[in-house]
Amino acid sequence: MDTIVVRNLVKTYGAFKAVDNVSFSVKQGEIFALLGPNGAGKTTTIKIMTTLIPQTSGICIINGHDVRKEPRVVKRDIGWIASEVILDDDLQVIENLKLQADLQGVSDWYATAMRLLEYFGIKNTVKMRAGNLSTGMRKKVEITMALLGDPSVIFMDEPTLGLDVGTRSMLWDLIKKTRDEHKVTIFLTTHYMDEADQLCDRIAIISKGKIVTIGTPEKLRSKAGGGVVVLTVTGEFSMSSIRSLSYKRQGNEIKIHLRKSKDSFVSVLKKIDLFQVSALRLEKPSLDTAFIKLTGSTMAEQEEDHPIDYRKFYRQLQRARQ
Image (cartoon, rainbow, N blue to C red; front, side, top):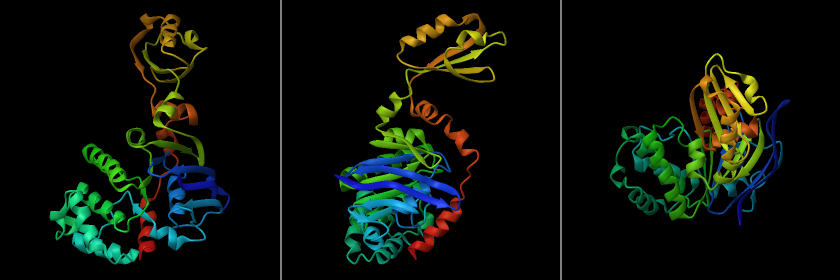
């Protein structure tokens, strides 16, 4: 059963198409990621899905409800977790939870809040000011807030942006635990390859407003071919020996993309003069290499020309919640 259905979604700003005919569906109970660089259309898509902005055309359905025609119904059925912690630092944890409950019109929130805080191991923070919590605790409180209204879908926009490695790993475990224990569908956006790979059941790669492909992490990695041979070469290295191969050179480093099986590695070695190579390694297929093959460039290269003003977006989010 599909909890989310998006068909031919378009969002334009003048002549610019931020979202260009995007279509996908998300099954009930899935952790689904929209993976792409800054400027790819991820945040615009999730803002449409959470009723913050209207689409130019196309359809977005959440649990059978059209986000454009029934925004209030959709809002009651979803939870939201942003990349920036949006707790009021001057309020106690319990006061932040009450505020969220009031905003959502949840009357019997207290018992649910206490149960969730205990579930996440932070019940002792209930009287603490939010500003005194660690980043990990603050994220747990935000997940508690998102679950107060018993949503069927939780949206997370870049949920681990700016977090250290340890906190990111903790949050991944928490997201999986939340899905498994509370039977919710989780839709997230990210530009972290490892996050999408480790966390998600399926991934949609988005680039320049278009969906490039959708599949499980395993399926997407298989699109990268047989891996990448990375050579560090001397100045005498003969490029003619690899002309027939798919490669990319940057300085003294050459990345050769294997097209099929591991046996191709042997054929590459036979083509080159190893005396002109100072270092060599084989990288197994990854989402990074799949992304390059599918989009034509790295995530970093695509992000260079698309800086995102996150502060502007979260100002809009705060206004939407008031």
